[in-house]
Picture 1 (tube, rainbow, N blue to C red):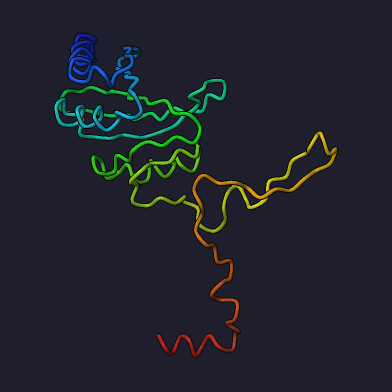
Picture 2 (tube, rainbow, N blue to C red):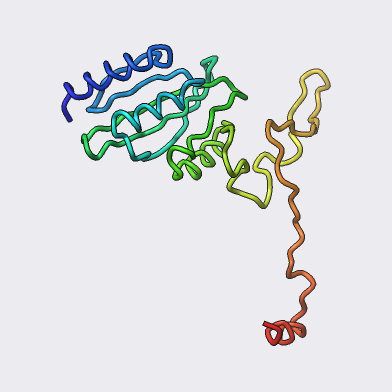
Length: 188
């Protein structure tokens, strides 16, 4: 990929969205843009509409616990017409959220759910605001930890940023006996 094309693209995007772009770099044949989290929709919309990045390849996350803004959400975009790839990053504090990009790319539905499951990043306006796994909260309902002051293990309820659905652990098949199966098959 042409470094000249990427340099020109970076200059155009920074001109169009001065307040939204924090920095950019070109490495390994790809442009990486660090965007202000509150302006992520403006940046991605501009790349899609004005620069031909019609394909959202992936959304992933990274956790840097040593940073104040410990989470990075990374959008990987592709322009097949221009043969260019762009990576757009937004850094977030723990508990912060990003607007959903499902309205721009419907495929973002699953990608955003995966980032939520792995990192707990909330996406405002996401059509399916619940985790992929529905049978049990991954964190459980009780936190078990050792308390130095009390010198014992204590159990505390987990405080969740987003409440889980009401989980029904009853199997719909528990009350079906082998004798009842022929009658159920005859009904269907």
